[in-house]
Image (tube, rainbow, N blue to C red):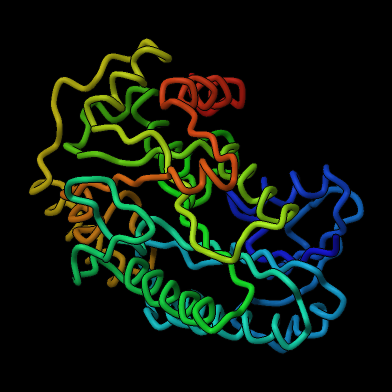
Amino acid sequence: MNIFITGATGFLGRQVLQALHARGHRLTALVRSPGKVTFPEGVLIAPGAVEDLGSYRDSLNGQDVFVHLAALVKMWVRDSSQFDRVNVEALENAIRASADCGIRKFIHTSSFIALGPSNGKPLNEEDPRRTGDFHNHYERTKYLGDQVARSFLKEGYPVTILYPGVIYGPGALTDGNIIAKNIIPFLNGSMPFGLSILDWSYAFVSDIVKAFVTVVEEETPSRRYILGGDNRSGGEFYEALYQVSGKKPPSVNLPIGMAKLAGYGEYALAILFGREPSMLTHQVAEIYKHSWAYDSSLAQKELHYRVTPLVDGLKELVEWLRKSGFVK
C-alpha cells in the first residue's frame, strides 16, 4: 500500500514507519527538517510541516492510507497557540485533504490524555470524560483534536482514532518517551526520590506498533480504540523496576505539593529565559494527582491487541538503556 505518514521522527512514529516499511509498504514521510533524519532505503520524504497543508497537499495524491502521528508534545512553549495550530487545526485540515484525495483510511493518533483521568474504574471508549478541567495546553488541544476527529467519524469519514496509553520502551528519547527519560536519572543514582503517582496505564511500544499495522493492513471498522497497557500504581511501578534493575524503590516520595512548587519555579524560568522546563511544571505536577487507567478490551477483541506486563516491558527497556549507554 501507499502510505503517507506524519510524525515519523518521533518515538512512536519512527517505529511505526520501520514496521510498515519492513512489511513492504511504500511510505512517504512528512518531515520538517529532511537533512536531520535518516530513514530506511526507499522511504520518500515530503519536506514540510503538518500545520502547513500547502507544503504536503500534492504528496497525498495516490496514497491509500494517511497515518497521522504528528503532534506538539511539550510541557510548555512560549507561544501557546502553536498547540492549537498543530494539534487541532492541522488535524482538521489533514482529514479534509485526505478525503478530497480519495484516501480510503485515515488513522489519527490521539492520546489517553484526551480522554481525561480515570480517577476510579478504568475508562473505556464509551465513557464520558470525568472532568472538564485541563492541566495544560497539550491536554486541552489533544482533547479538542479528539473532538474534531470524532465529528468526522460521525459524519461517515473513514477515520480510525487510536488512544495509546503511557507509552514506554526502547527508542528515541523524545518528549513522547517520558518513562525512559524519567527513569534514567533514577537508575543512575542522580534522583534518589520518587513521585507519589497513582494508577497509570503503561503501554509497551511494540504492542502499540502492532496495533497500527493491524489497522493499516486489515479491514477494521472506522471507530475508536484505546491502546492502553498494564494499569499499575506508582508503588507497583517501582517494584517492577526493582525486579528488573536491582535498583531499590525510593525510600522517599517527593510530595506532590513540593513537586508543584518546584514546577512553578521551572515555569517561571521558562517564561524568563524562553527555554523548556527541564523536569516538570506545576501543571504537570497536577497530572500526577490523578489516576490514568484505561480498558483496552475492545482493541484486544477487534485488533488482536496485546498488553505486555509491566515487568516484562521494563526488563526490555532497562536492558536497552544499559546496552545503549544511557544507564551505567
